[in-house]
Image (cartoon, rainbow, N blue to C red; front, top):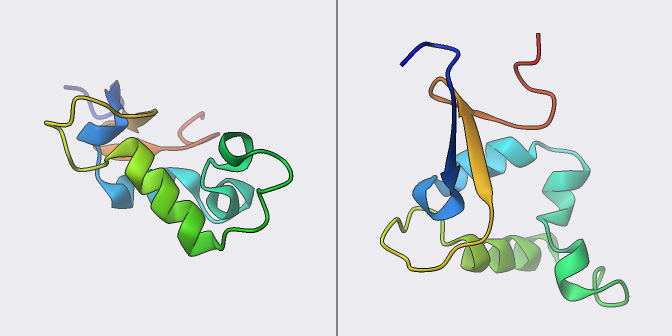
Length: 88
């Protein structure tokens, strides 16, 4: 595989650490992909740790045998890639 090859895997085949790297440290990290999952009124109630726990439960990261998952993780080579990463 080339060092710049793009690979996309179901979230349960990625590590939790890789998913967190993709989210970065800005709004996606603070949201943990829960804004549209829990609804507008309830979004601010859960703590960051609670939102992260919800995302971990939904994705089942590092559980490749899980029959269900939510989301995808992209890699460029062996590096997890987030929005705007590796675009030149």
